[in-house]
Amino acid sequence: MSYLLQQQLTKPGSGGLLLLRRRTPLPRRTVTYFCSGAYRWLEQTRLGDQTGTECIWLVRSEVAPGQITSAGAATVEALSPTATPVPEKGHVRTSEMQKCLKDRYIYSPKLIRDLIFAELRAGMTSLADKQLTVSQLLREASTQAEEKAQAEGVKFEFWRSATDGVLENLVAAQVLLDEHGRAIEPGPHARGTKVSGLSAEFENQCEGYLLEYLIVTLGDVSWPKDRTALAHALFKVGPTRKEVYELQDRVDELMALQKGRIVEKKDGTLSVEP
Image (cartoon, rainbow, N blue to C red; front, side):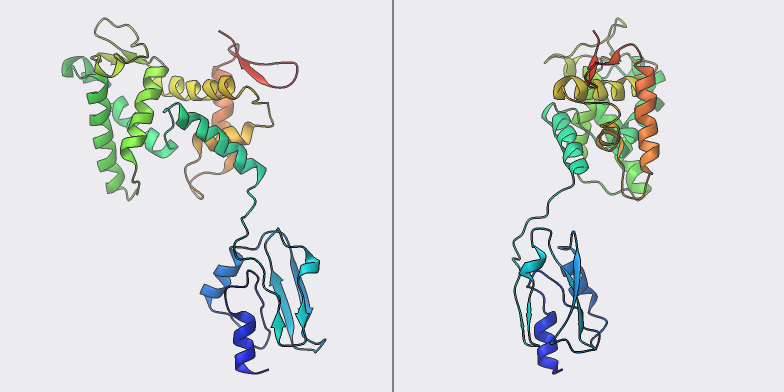
């Protein structure tokens, strides 16, 4: 087979991948380009039924097997390069939950949330002396958390948005205490109110609030069907940081803490008792 023909059959841009036994391996760039569009199945064919010309197709999920043809050893039918990948149902559900939290401005990535929580926990004993407002307190904790994250090699660009998410989460969960020891209630006044303390279990209360908010707002969260989606939406850190069962364990822990408050209805969906 001529070099020009090999180039034609393996060039990027067709939406499928043709691997020729006599021309391997393909450059990594070419393989990556095509594999990014491969979803459901592959097909092996020969050119002109000749031994040694086996081809492997990796194609997008929208393309049916009958659409792939090879005429002799010269032409290949082009597949659409604009086909859109179809996301998995689990990813759709997780994204729906995360969007729900973002729309309420209480979403923050788990890793960043933990870093800010750790700084808040470390400074609990001196809150009364500092006389900081809610906004000032969160800004200080976020700055310290960002410095430690950079020292540990954690890369994150959206600290301001994440800090706002943590702040609104703290206020919504009513875990911040004012100068009289009362919980600071949600509202326009909250950010300017001085903080004298934090609830002892503010981390569990904040994440418990996120869980309850999803249940109430979505209205169709069922158990255990949505257990994994909840775990990913609330606690996913990164592709290699934690196994899914560890994330699920945290959901289970919160469910146990909310026993009697989060209940299962007859249709299998969850509800939050007042």
